[in-house]
Length: 268
Image (cartoon, rainbow, N blue to C red; front, top):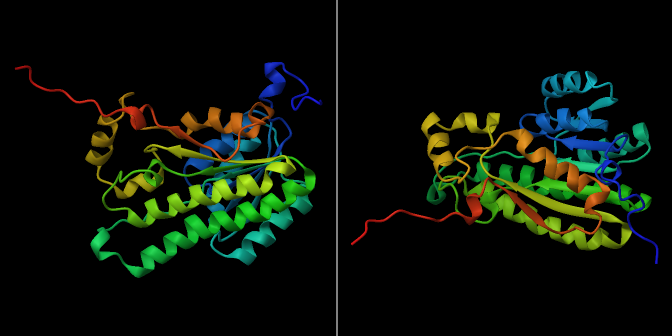
């Protein structure tokens, strides 16, 4: 029987050099992943609604001497997504890895949700995931190799914030769609997985008061909220040959938050 991994040396097992990596969403976590993948020799395609954010990230990638192109897209528009993905394939000949980081999180009380906020969040976070996973998955299936990595959230699995029902629901739906794509693409050599972060210092957190992040950090055993670079290692693992037999899974990268429910108490 043919071995699934040809070279077992660690420098090859986790190698992403020259892989064509499409990163969607460049405003927060995505920008950190751009630099991390560029530093490890990946060829990059950036997709985002804001050209300014992509230009900043592309400038950092250029410092590592890798090719990096940018593509404007509204992730909630199926036609735009399919056109963008097709253009990336034309430009590079293939797509090896998708890092899908796009997400919005309007805040408000669950009993008084605005229809517009609920609808837009589902369209961007859930529909957008389905659109880009399907479009990229078809290309990867044709090439019999691929890695799709969706950035979900701990909010998909618990009521972590009382004012983000649309975000939480959309991330739960994203996790479900990831499992379906994983099964659909498994025989074509394509893996599909989720990463569920804890609170990250990104522009999304700017809508929160300072004390919110202080109190959030207090619930994490490591004693701090996360940074974009905390997720790079897991992304590289899921993008490489090292994860060849891993699909349909969610990886909680959360500083121990998901296993921590300890409390102090007074002795009798």
